Length: 81
View (tube, rainbow, N blue to C red):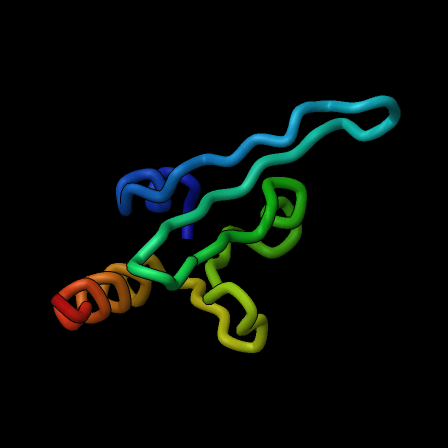
């Protein structure tokens, strides 16, 4: 998955600026009701590519933008009204 695909899926960029010796980093998030989807950080993406997981479910990892799109569509269509 690419960073552009995360942006096209309307993920929001969260930036942590440099501080002292820390060069700073950023990641992407997407909120669906009470659920939060999080990407890995930009420095991790260099080694592993961009990935998305469900907050607090680190063992579920999405690496394909189409899968993330389908997940978002399915959950948003079934949110309690």
